[in-house]
Image 1: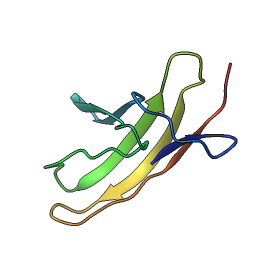
Image 2: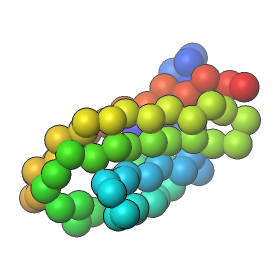
Image 3: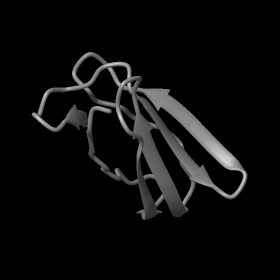
Image 4: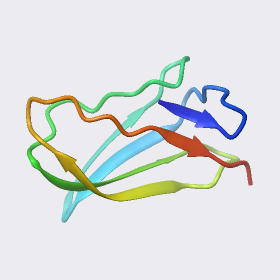
Length: 78
């Protein structure tokens, strides 16, 4: 889920996951939820942003293929 510092869901935020040269991108829905399906097992970096907000990045996210991995974001307005 992606929210702002007041807890309001952010729709249309860009969320992407990176590992070496592999990148997958998606966008949040109207409730701030997102999903990236089919991510292979590994250690990933996950980032989120939206126009008017700073980018937030988390490194070292452990993903296990077939399991649900949750990473929430709180974006700060610029």
